[in-house]
Image (cartoon, rainbow, N blue to C red):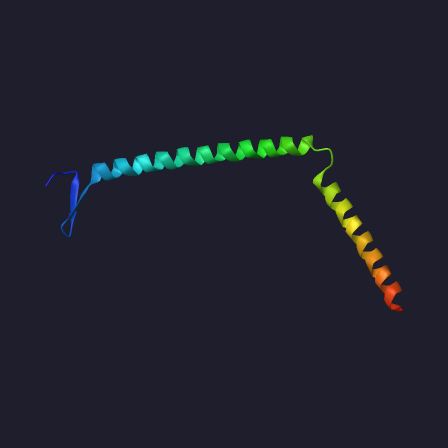
Length: 88
């Protein structure tokens, strides 16, 4: 039996090949994490630039839409009350 192999119940493992595979897997994981980080940063920067280019902020648009919905709801409620003669 070679010194870089071990035997476990008839199952032979080449330790140097296993260690090399583990090292390459670790390096690949680090490269993958670095690539994912770069993608996230690029998307965040593009989103931030897109938000800066908008004429109206999304919160202002949402507030205006909410106000319009409340006005429409109140108008509908008033029309229903007028039609049905409800005292409330």
